[in-house]
Length: 145
Image (cartoon, rainbow, N blue to C red; front, side, top):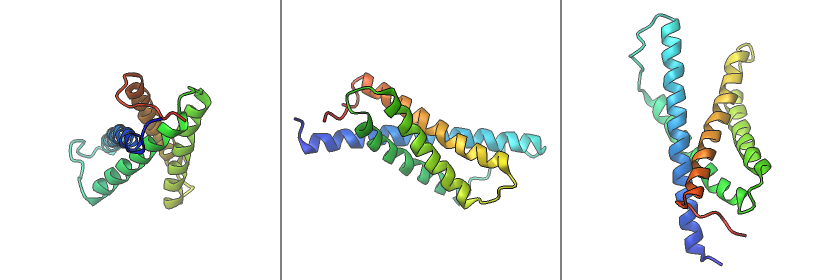
């Protein structure tokens, strides 16, 4: 039985991997989204304003990814049940996506609402695959019950 300190260290490592993967995917999708919108609207595609909104979005992405990483390590344990893996991604993705929808409660923009939900699910899926890769390469030890 591993010690409590060892388990905490592994959880923090999983959180860091999750935070990094989630934040990078969120940032990449946001940059692509704003670039495409700028191109469609014939605006300057290079000029992405880096205001406080981006900093808040990145901070929330880091926290969301960290919490997902820590939780995912405990969810999957050592039994490799694909339903648990997929369910963790869907649960986190839907909760975050629907919370974003709730804060932008403009149902007239159905496409934007769907994009927010899909974006959250995709970002958590990327974080999941990074965590699975880190566990398979023994960078993170899985939680053993």
